[in-house]
Image (tube, rainbow over all chains, first blue to last red; front, top):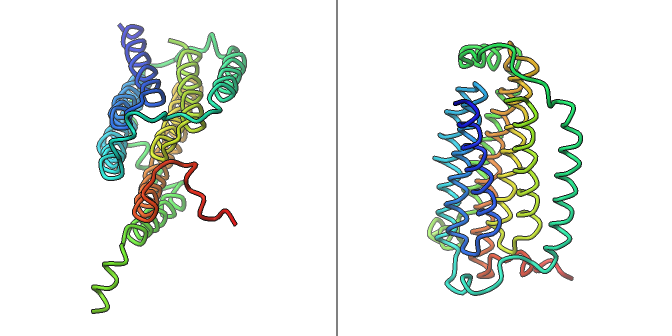
Length: 168
Length: 101
């Protein structure tokens, strides 16, 4: 059962990722991205990372994928459906990716026999203690980064039209 | 399921992400490729956490930080893409040549 679930999630993730990269229609690619992120959430659940599973669905699927869909709808044109969506250098890029993949697999082969020694435990309590204990400083810094991103998004998406209105 | 299986999935996802980021002409497509690479790194961290240090959650907390930074990155990136699109009406990366002397 565990193996079956793993192969289902891995298959969904990788096929959807291929769709993200290869589909010509960017809207379809963005929808595939949502599916791929859901597959990754399933893999997190298999790994016993329950809090990561929840935050993956809340932040990635519910936030980032939807945001990307919005921008695709706002900044797209109909001519994209007929023009080429990949650049001319895709064969060397595919070669680089294939070589990287093969060497990563060779490197990872030493972990072939490593299996889990104990059943997974709920992680939320331990994560909360860690984030407000040993990792309190990075935790506060990350809130600063989020604030900066918020301000940056507002600054960049403001139009000159808005500024004229403000002056008037 | 051994650690190798999870690492293989993550390596495949990472390479697909690199391919997307390198070959897409569309800036939003490039951003999506980068998101795939972030997710591959997250799977790696969670898998190492589960199989090598089952009693600690440090790897998962690093994953949480990565998710947060990715969210911030994608928000700023998409705001930039929209701002550029309003000015020069294109989302293809090769047309972004305003800085060409």
